[in-house]
Structures are given as structure tokens and as C-alpha cells.
Amino acid sequence: MKNQTILFFAVCIICVLCYRCTNANTPLVDSAFDNAMYGGYTNDTAWGQHLVTILGCGDCHTPKKVTAQGPVDDSSLLLSGHPSQAPVPQLMPDQVAKGLAATNDLTAWIGPWGRSYGANLTPDSTGIGSWSKEQFINAIRKAKFKGLDNERPLMPPMPANSFRNLTDAELSAIFTYLKTIKPIHNIVPDYQPPMANK
Image (cartoon, rainbow, N blue to C red; front, side, top):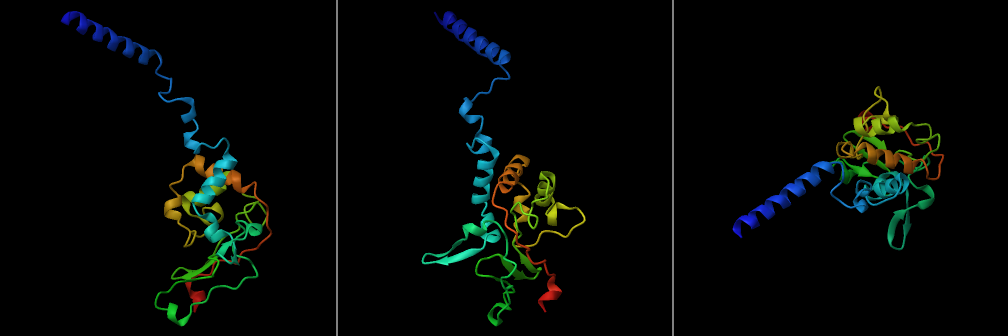
């Protein structure tokens, strides 16, 4: 009886191994998991919108409006960057020691790096309208302004060191989504290096 039990288990193990060898290309998960790398979303646009939301891109790239509940994103200016007509931040006397200031809507910042402004991410000519996907990926991967190798680095508060770890698929989805939003004509002020703070 003992030998028969051992033989039975040996045959079972051999059958499982043979099955695994002949089905090596079959995923060990069900088909519902196949789109897990896309966060369960069925297309790049929806996944890109999700990523833009959870990464907080609107925090610095969308102007705010004040409501009874405090500042909220102005959806009519979604991801259009620092408004061209808005004031730039100034260091107040109590902020000089800290060396950091921002506008109330967080679209413009001043610090040791100079003055920086949330870029226009809409598909307008003043935003990313003429950009290629490769250019967008290059901008994030290499932290280069406009995704061009000979341009200046992206400036704080852009979390370039973190965002460069996004996968190509994630960046592609973000770019796909950004190309679908409302184009907003807004010329964001140019970055000003530290000497301009004086």
C-alpha cells in the first residue's frame, strides 16, 4: 500500500511537470489580470487620466479658484500652467530665512533655484501641442525642458527624480491623455535663474 501511494504521488508530480512544460507560455493568472499593468483601465487615455490625477500633476499645473471649501482646481483651466497675467511670487521678509515662496495656487515658485512656473500641459501651441511622445518621455526621463537634450533642467518643485522612474507605458498613457484635454492658449512666463531674485 505504501509503495502504491508513493507511485501515485510520483505519477501526479510527473503529470504536473509535463503539463507545465507543454503550457510554458500560458500565464498562471486569469485573463482579468492581463490588464493589471494598466491599473484595470481599458485604454491609455483613461489610464493616463488616472495617473495624472494620482501623481498630483494638477497641484502645480492647474490654476485654482477659491471656494467656501478652500482652493480647488479651476477645471476650465485644467493643466494650463501658471496664468500669464498672474503675479509672480515675491519673498516676504518672514520668508527670506526660509528662502521659499509660492503663489496661492501653487503654479509659481521661488527658491534657491530661481523662479519657476507650472508649465502648460495642454495640447495647445503654447503647451505640448507640437510635442511628440518621444519628446515628452525624454522630458520626464532626462528632466529636460521641452524634452530637448540641449535645454536647461526641469526646475523644482517638479519631482523629476521620482517621475523619471515612471515606465514608458505609464508615460505613454499620460501623454495620450494630455493630448485629449482642452487646448488652452497660455504663455507661461520663462524660468528666471537665481540672479533674477535680487
